[in-house]
Image (tube, rainbow, N blue to C red):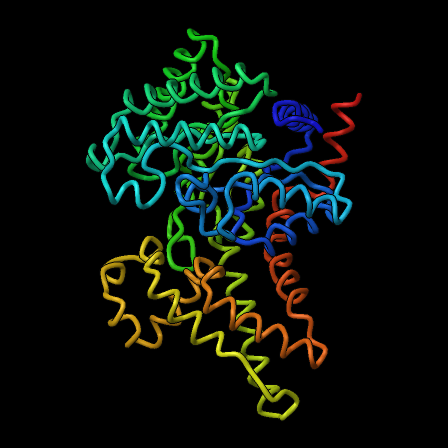
Length: 421
């Protein structure tokens, strides 16, 4: 297996020969999405990164994650098994997205003391390391005690402390090298200007070099993207992206963009030319899978009316109600909508439908939703409709837009040719 640092060297070499591409990080919102991702990557021959937040995947001792109730070992083992089952012989990398203190919602809500939050972050990273993650995003830019912005000095200090801890633990256990990502895309994370971005990279790299620690592969920068509702409400800034790329490359790292969801083809096609090394997409895929299920539920109702099936699920209604009750959708809302009560949302049919679409993926493991989904799949199977394949194909169509625009198709073969030259 080509490790990430080797892969990036090959990507940069190809870029120098005019073969530009932007790597894709995929949020693992479900097992179905992981399967569809690997299926598409195999067909189109491109490398992928699975980027799991701590809310999605985490250690058993911290409550696991909302994706299949998996911990890191479950996550890695499932990806490896799916890859084996479909004879995937390409490149895939398992990555921690937004690791660090207070990165689980409940940790911020509890306002854990800094020492406790850092201890938990280290334990979580250690499990990432032991489970076989390839890339760790070090993101100490959340702090309920720091106000709206964590001071840059504090971010750098905690970033170095976390990388030093991980490297010490890795060497103790004689584990293979792991790569790093640093910084954040949050508009309140402090890196909101080109000057701040360079200052952060300069100071961080200097501190890491002084301690003999590895430099990150990626530094996250704010290109103007922002995902809310089911659209990108930010204002992508191509000129700023070009400057961020230039700064990052000066220090030998790549610009990583988060929140690339819902960007237009026009903007996505410009990414490789601008030199954006990698981009993350997650909520859009969760929405796509939720839409697939609600569309299948509508098909089921149509067939029920014709008499072709005699029993139908109540998936659309149950998913909507359970999603709204979960309240995990609030982070994706804008304005006063984020403060509405559950009862107020349930009473507004239009808003309730929107929220079900936005946050449905949080409920895929909800027992009531799983029960209705099982009924749906079985009723459609009885009349020859393969709901699983239909869902996978829906996800593949959404993801292929990114692989096409990012110049990814055929990239794995090109990378291998450079590495093996």
